Length: 319
Image 1 (spheres, rainbow, N blue to C red):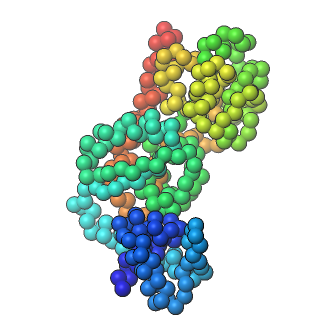
Image 2 (cartoon, helix red, strand yellow):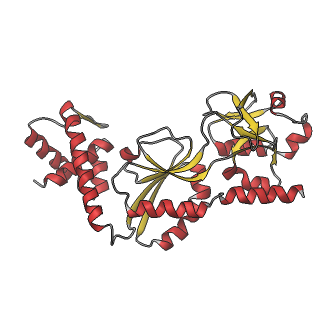
Image 3 (cartoon, rainbow, N blue to C red):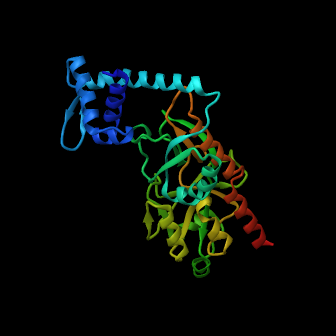
């Protein structure tokens, strides 16, 4: 038995919950993966999985074997990577996970240039707004927007994340003026379903040390998708607090107008949000992951191009 091949098959089957998915990932037959696991079980003298029609479940022995086996495979991968790092070029299949709206607007638009610069890389992208287990789905790297919740991942800050209060000209024309944050209590506010409270938080622009003031909001529309809230704001149904990377074109074209420009607005208190590149912790980061993160950080810029373009549009409209 090729013990390392058998351990690889077992570890991926445990992480993916399926012999067939593990076989597909490694280009093996399902029967080969099953045979590897059977040989391991015979060698260890105990079952590693409880098998069901839908998913594999580790037994107690399987759980105990998984941790050291996965560490051994990770150490082997790091050793191989270290031995070839000096001459390594970015290559191979790069599995990327990213949020739907940000991925479509600010990652995929740059993929042609990225692939032209790195012709030996292939990309398998998964777009979802769910926070997924990167190791479980076999992803090499993910783009995350906002606050990071998984401290086990390594994170690289790619760009800041800012939000802006906006509404359509038609909405603002037919409703009472807004001079300060508490005036929002008399307006229809489009809330993000994933924010912790039905409140927005404000402090004067440029006063980062100032306390955030909480303002309760209400409105007739609530959604768990930022693009849906953008469409709702464009339709004139209320005021939205949306990321600048999402609303830049609408503001530049005059379809949305900024509200309360003297105030910094947030959907939640806490540390500043950002655009992050995250990946599972490893002693050595693969060249393809390093290349992708460096390329995207360079393309986004500091400040990011979407914020610069919006500032130009707002300055021109005020002139």
